[in-house]
Amino acid sequence: MRILTDESQSASRWPQAGDSLIASGIDWETEALIDVSWDSFLTYAIGYKKAADSVVVAVEARETAADLAVYPVCFLYRHYIELMLKGLIRLGNQLRDRTSDYPKHHRIRDLWNTCRPLVESACPEGDPADTQTVEKCILELASLDPSGEAFRYSEDKGGNPSLNKATQFSLANMRDVMNRLSGFLGGSYDYMHELLQYQADIDSESF
Image 1 (cartoon, helix red, strand yellow):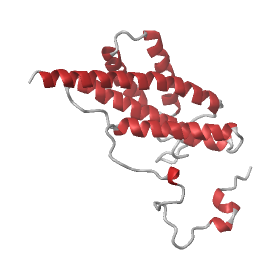
Image 2 (tube, rainbow, N blue to C red):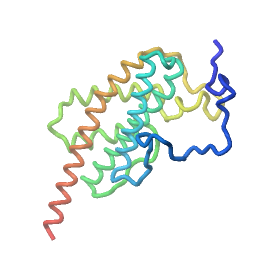
Image 3 (cartoon, helix red, strand yellow):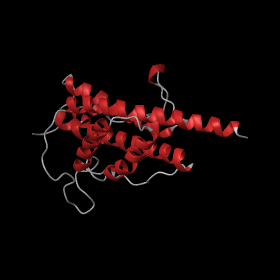
């Protein structure tokens, strides 16, 4: 099957003199602000997830082919997971050791192994069965893309295929499961952030 790119469909879509990727437009609701956030992990993570959700909606509306959308969708959801885990690790380390350190690698299996005990320590009343279900889903994604490269490039640095086997699944189902994962991760994030704020209040009152 020959796949036509957007650029090949119409020569009139070529860049024109005066074009700028970062110019203002006439619709103010499409204006975006890149700014320093109070919590960049959370802001970035939510943005990636919402972008993936929107692509799945386009697939459901038959506006985008699922076989084309699968790579950006999986990358965006995987990056959401990676950022949420790193953010949770940072919060857990702040609660435990008063440090803001977090791993700088992209291996979500290892990130989850670091994150899980921190979440369980901060939220001991959580149901272990729920945490185990979250782990199963994260490890499924890690098995497809261990290092965060498979959905970005078709080949690795050695010229080998990034994906080792054909896998068929529903993007709509992935979206729905990701929403439930988001409930767990986001809820844990909010709870741990509240604990950190409470800890800061206690520390300020001690002086």
